[in-house]
Image (cartoon, rainbow, N blue to C red):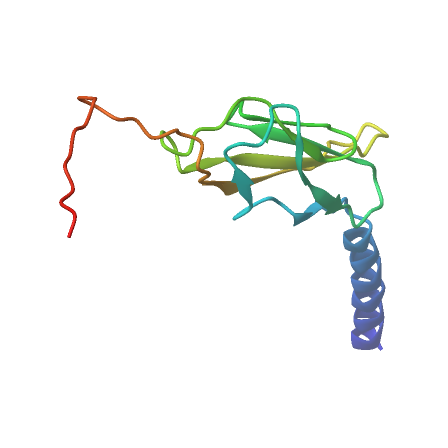
Length: 144
């Protein structure tokens, strides 16, 4: 009888513990994080270049951020990413930085903060006019 009571007590504890774990605050997830995205070097400053997308399994509101670069800025609420500085593929072919997502838990509980390293590729464009040195050039062509 004592063994049966102990088993029942353990079963109740296991159900209670499982309920506590399932109610624990879960971290948000980035579904679209910008890694491997290409941006043309001739993209005008201020242009929308990407949209970060994320969810929180607890359905808490989330905010987005960018760390480690000033080239891009993000609208914390919408996840819209804008070009903040002029790009130059000839001086830098890619940018590596972090995108973040944070849930706003409230009720005195700590927020969950997730940070992903991403690399954005700068796509080359024909933005440099040809330069001719030692001009003028003189040449002769023989006719037949």
